[in-house]
Length: 199
Image (cartoon, rainbow, N blue to C red; front, side, top):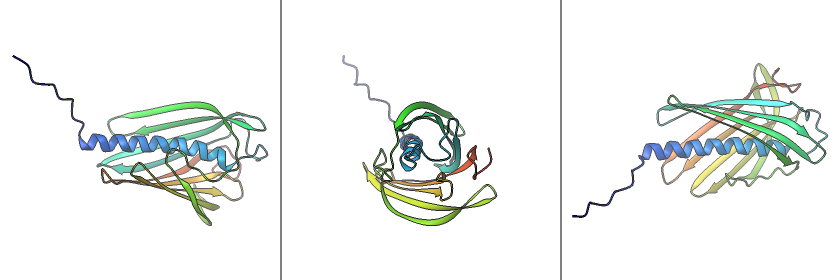
């Protein structure tokens, strides 16, 4: 007598959605690191020094779970054409913590257009202000948007006009197939770069 075929375990809709969110947040960390290098594509930037860092923190709610997200971008070393960048992220939910740290050499570039894993391209730039700690910072906002594999993404990077360093990232993601909507603000909370939050 043949036994019935074994069905693969079913992954709940909730788990699939959460996995999608985690993947998207990890992509934000990758985007921030690449953006950081692409925007500031010159070894003559006054803040480009060994040990320079920015820590960004944000929180969002998804499927009734609070997700806390932290990114640390740090210059390990650099020369006239490349930067060795450390990228660290921590993602915490009530039931788990996911962390990752990578260090890699990346080419400096002055290209503000970004078409990386989120499929984003620069759509517009404008001047505005952001509150960083107790300081109001004059910024240029760079808005990106795009669609990749049914996921619509909008990301805005707010960059200090006087220092040339990002002080905030905002992300909005909609995945049509799973009706997943996610918004996340990542604000600069700690740095050792003069003219911003004191580190």
